[in-house]
Image 1 (tube, helix red, strand yellow):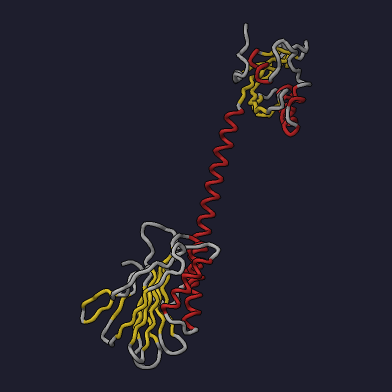
Image 2 (tube, rainbow, N blue to C red; image 1 turned 180 degrees about the horizontal axis):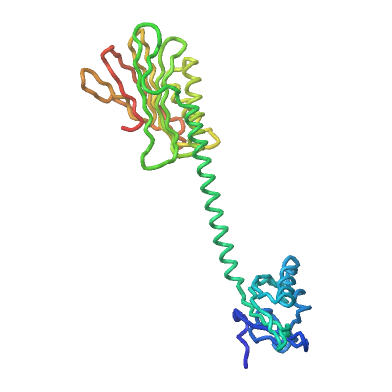
Length: 326
């Protein structure tokens, strides 16, 4: 009977019997294929069988055979063998003792199945599952870190705030952050209000593209630079130009938009500059209108682009709204 064509996969199941009285060994043709041995070669005895196993699996086979021959227990276990070409296969072996008329073990019969592909598939699934779980843990950790960074940088106050806290012409400020309902990712949005050393008030709103730690880290850098320049007395228009340069030269460039307003309570004058961001909305007597902008882009692709700079006089009865979206 001709064997399988060269290169074809072996038959997956073979059988064997080891006679303890005559030392005869019988192997099926399929078992020769499984062990990678040429047909007609001597089958492996029970003493020789462990020599083709990986060293770590040899004690397992010895225990199975001893339990079957000495204690009469059925065998059921797996071990790995090394083929003559150094490939490794995983075999599942089941068997039981064959008793003579006096109830003594005369031989051992076994069925061996090649389960290598099955075990490889299971390992692949396990690695994929572990990788997915690891990615999920990393995503949760990065989300938590992004949230913590955002909460650290953004103003601690919620609801309303009055600036400056003393003196006439103070502003009543209210702000609320509404993250996107379609995504659980933390972005680079910010809002801020702070009293400047000269008594004026700084109001800023902005957004950087992206999500997660890179976006919140860039936002923290931008907001820190903005606050520092405002405290140093830099006008909103020039301040926007410096922020644009900061984005251009950053190690991780980003696209973004910003609105910077400075209010002088002594004169009622609002100075503001925008870069890629909607202009403020001005409300008077219940009617709102958008202040006329000259919109420019605050981003890396447009180095040195100008920003819109505008001033308007405000009365105590006025209200303005600075939004991240139009």
